[in-house]
Image (tube, rainbow, N blue to C red; front, side, top):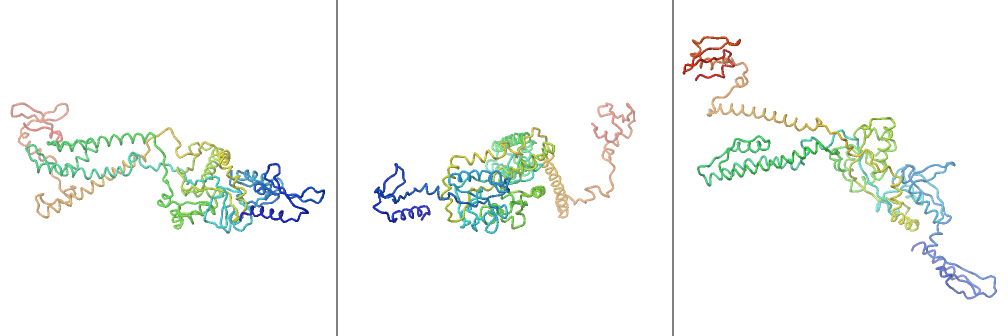
Length: 555
């Protein structure tokens, strides 16, 4: 039975059993809901009058004159924090205590603030939850994350606002998009292009062969498999081809591939231009799965909601697995120097967005006061999306009558939007501190944008070297089996190592030995020439220098 109804029933019973001197009468008083029972006016001055209050009035008076012990966070600006007045008495401030003041004026109670042994959410042994669990306080006036079904010793009030949790990290120097040459297309598109390069050549070869086999004809012209494969690759690189298809079916095949390549390269060129001109900065961390997959070190508040959620809830299994491997840590985030040192080591800071924004703003203001260059002031950055959302509310010990009294007032705060207004009014400026994209106007081509080019060139040369070695081995194997390829090449002959070289122009000398035997030499413009006669009787000048002599042939 509700305690308020029980009190009303008890008062009614007491009034009805009080022994009056004469018959009691009951009537409505001034149209209100207060019933008055009194004795008839018989001139007796010892008459009795008993007035019963309705439920709302009983609720208002049930806490009147009572003293409540209220727990809160020492520093959780602007939601709840504690200051000392001139007499050294703890005084609560923030949005939470604006609500408490409204409740105090309506219900007429007084209160004092009790701070936990640790300024954390905690558990049954420490923090605010320890005060509530052991009934050391009557309520907690703080925006605590609602833990339904987790603590049976607690009661929760009306849900007030929602907290969103983000990841803060040191701002990377380069975008996680990677090389600009690969940015225009997603990985799936590049994979499909590679598959098409491998399949289209053999497909063309098979169709052309099938057509020749079925139709034949004088215009039949077959191409080798290697020719078809190189045509596909050459078309992609805009190199053209010497292949001249003679049938309509092969022409349609070649034209179709050219159209596909034309559209593909047009999209690639347009997207590449847009990327290099209006590059959007991206982070390597998009969600909590990336934290575990990339083996990042991370930390969060010791005894906070994240520690509880990671250890208990299933939504953050990846973080629990990461912490079990030694990558997750729970530290005292009130030590700002320790937090900055950890972030400088590329550790990730997981916390509620308001706390992270305040941390970034403080760092930005300090660097501005030290006259740090504008481009160097934004050291940190937040991820674009939150990975966890939790509702917040005031907390009470189990079976407390306070939620039934306070929830109606708290609900009015929520439905009227007062709490959201107060949170926005007391929050940071609407201007975002150090956004993900700093919107720099200049965009010069960086060396990292050409990394793919370097990789492609290195891969090409390495592939050519591997093919050369394979050709050498193939020649040796073919020669040892007596194939038509001729005798095996010796490695010394291939690279001219230790082999006596033939005269450089022996071929030329044999070709012109008879012609130049009786030819006279003449110097023209400082150069020596042989004067010879052609078969038609004309005189020709042939340079004496061997390299130039190769340009002339005997007619």
